[in-house]
Length: 251
Image 1 (cartoon, rainbow, N blue to C red):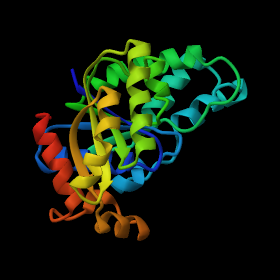
Image 2: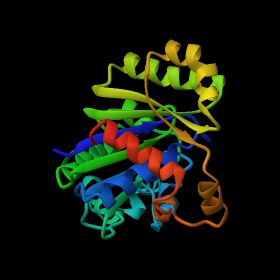
Image 3: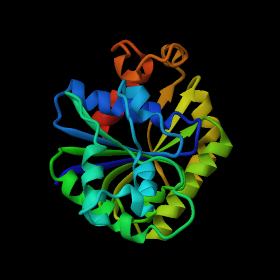
């Protein structure tokens, strides 16, 4: 079975940057095949990886609610399974699914169960499944992704963001999600004094601080120029910090 890795945290903390650089580490070190799943409503992991996506899963599922969109002779179940497979974006190093935004009104229990079954089968073909979640972790709460080996909760160097990270931990506990290891990563730090000032808030979260990622002007430059973060050089401070975290948890 694939090793399941989830990344969570509120918007603007560098969550997608961390996910992209984690994937970069796995690829550069030949760790095995990777399925990247962008489960954030504000999906942009594909841009960070330099991949193009034509259709999201939520768009696909919404289209199947209208019977006119289902070809004659195909059941809704068969059509959804076919479209799910065709929505997989493949590349030499990473394959990707993009979940997309809110699905709108109506019951999605049936297509959601199909999606869970599809993810279960698909995951068996990879060494790693990496999911970039929104803070609410909708797809984890629906049990689309289960049995998480490592969860990284991303926070920037502010007390408000650290508290938000703590609420993610509370949500995991409330859902009784099967998360074997859960860590805190603090981003955009200027120096060690940032962490010292936040230590009381960090302790309250109950999360293990596994690493810090300093502010990196190269990340800002790549974002500004719409260049994939996957292509950051080895000299990048953010790349080096994420590499160290991956080695620390022995991914």
